[in-house]
Length: 257
Image (cartoon, rainbow, N blue to C red; front, side):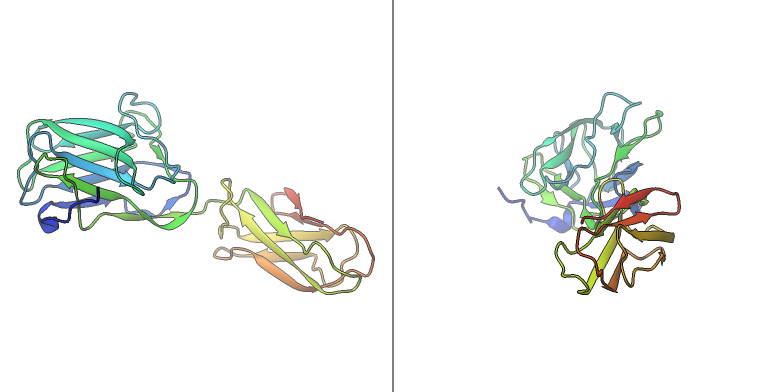
């Protein structure tokens, strides 16, 4: 059933550090600090930390400190906490870390610190979602009266996931043109996960499989550019035409014909 909105301003607050931004698909450690509001949290009450069902963010786990996704939770007052990760929230926020106060309770102002991807024990952290997203919400819900009635914390955090370094190039030509008819060539760098990225800074060398009028020998892309479009190209010969792109490291990719 839908989450309750009852006394939402009394269920507490949350802070996430670091704030980011983060590179999509990278490993990091997130520290989420929940501070109990005027309602506190009763014994067997708890919090849910949730993100979207469709996200491929790494799976938190609680048993292997040296492995990816190791997650810990501690209460500032020493209350015993129980943690699990499962699909136990309503759509679209089903992926959930559930932290319950099983031995004790929280008074107003007490804190629960959840380290998602705890690296203090030599683990690599948690792998972030692989697709870039400017606004990735992490929802926090609280069951303060141990009735399994959850209320969303008003200031649930949001993070930014940026594309990573270029790993390949996507070049696209129109599939059909008459001889000497004008066409354009579009080129875009992609990171290792297939996100369009603006992190390339350098020269690209271009060459055609046939003579292409108007095709420059090279173009330059700077950081902040997600690609380029070269207009006014033409080929007098009939037949398949491809353009090869070569980056500053010597790696090359061939466009569609």
